[in-house]
Image 1 (cartoon, rainbow, N blue to C red):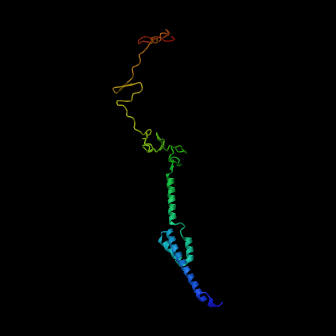
Image 2: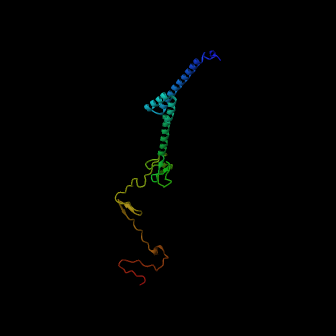
Image 3: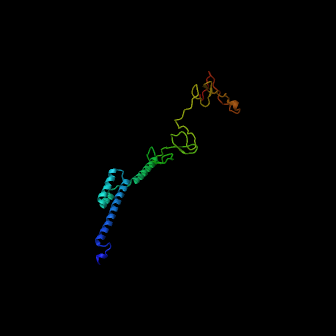
Length: 214
């Protein structure tokens, strides 16, 4: 085949055209890789030195530099690290929200009245709605009922003036306590007409009482 019929007129012109197209392709690829590296390293690091080094490696060494960058670049982007930090903070917050028994240090729920492991009293139920209430609260936040004072912590009742409180069976008069008058004595014969006649007579002051069995 004569060279006059070669596409482009001659094989030298065709070779030059092919080399020009290849150079344009490689130049475009080179610039594209440099720009892609610049964008990628900005998403993975905020250090300007690291960003400049990554761009220079690809800019100088082209494809081998790009392969080196893919090996040495940070594994996660800044957005992925931020999302992971949010997940870790949420997990830590959830763990902190879970209460622990002050005695055995085991996890307990917020609505537990006692620890199921060591039976430590954690909260007290409301007298109206039976909701668990913290000991530091003074009223129920669910029904509004005021809590009763704890045993040994409430105010003591005021004592009556003038001395100790009267016991059952005593009558308080004029700030003093006096024993109630004794009931009138009743004889056995008066209360029971059929009482036996051998009932012993009552002993009188100054008389010698008979001794049984003498």
